[in-house]
Image 1 (cartoon, rainbow, N blue to C red):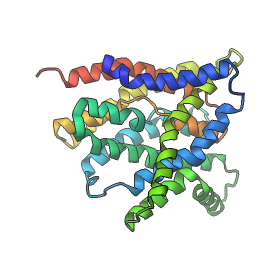
Image 2 (image 1 turned 90 degrees about the vertical axis):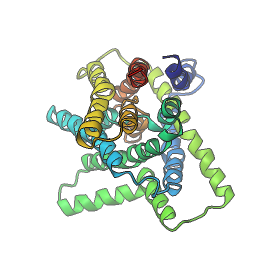
Image 3 (image 1 turned 135 degrees about the vertical axis):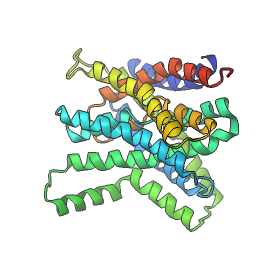
Length: 316
């Protein structure tokens, strides 16, 4: 548990820093939204572009692992989405809930934890998982949110509006541009690389500080629609159901080698990243369920990840 805590401690520290700055009124009421806008419009697009532009497609050619992790994420996403929509939740809010239950923090926690548990062999699976989560799953949620927010119901007009909104969305455009850059083997000047690295490095820290700022806001004591219970359920799905699904697909469906099964399960068992919160804030949806899920899953993962690592490395 100590090694897991050492990796998760910076996450808690950044959230607490934002929380403390807001409670001490060092940062104003608009700070959470404005900092999140910086992440969405600058830092995260730089990270997504940089990730896609520097991906080696030969190295990432592991179809069984890609399908395994895709099913683990998409299966949970679709199941939660359908349940939330059936319960009367707006499609945009249901999409945010769905990604909160299926969005593992592969970038910020996955890489160091994977190196700790499996060494350099974890780098390729973690990179694959990060691309699937940050680009594919994120894009799916954005598409559904955009559809939910459109008032136009004529199919071809709705499709055109959504497509235009997606093309203007920096979180969709940046990975597409990164793929194009990789496909033509574009080499960026060193100054441009430095620019991207500096912005990319700010994405996760700023998102976590923004989350702390949001959590520090004093709100009326109310729990509309069982928000706390929903957060607990989404957390349980994230930390238990998703890694269980990943194990079943990896071990029973594809029969992957034991190390690849373990890495798929570990990556699926990671707590919820800040992406769902960024979407909720960016689209001005209520972010309490999402923020609580991120916090609860990060706290809960101290126990679940420690137990998982102990089991994986237990003799026999």
